[in-house]
Image (cartoon, rainbow, N blue to C red):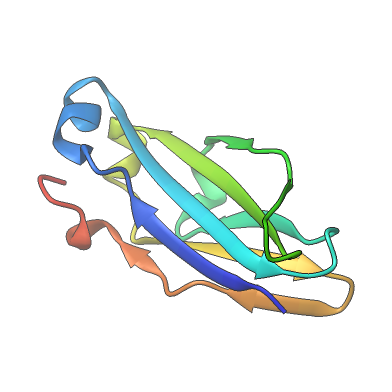
Length: 107
């Protein structure tokens, strides 16, 4: 099992002013280590984005954590309804609560 949570960059106003919306997905308390993270972007048919993933980290409790960061140009972010982070391992999939654009301060 794994816990999955996604959240907006703590400085969304600054990021949007710089032209990028940044969202981070953190999955932790996972086992085994072969879970992977992916993003589902509502309205993504014509929207491209950049994502980066951290290496898997073994925590002191013997469980693993991962993170993935999604970056969207501000003009594309304005076309998105919501984003969701999904953690998968084999046939198992866990999905974060969708983050809606209107939840981001100064979107």
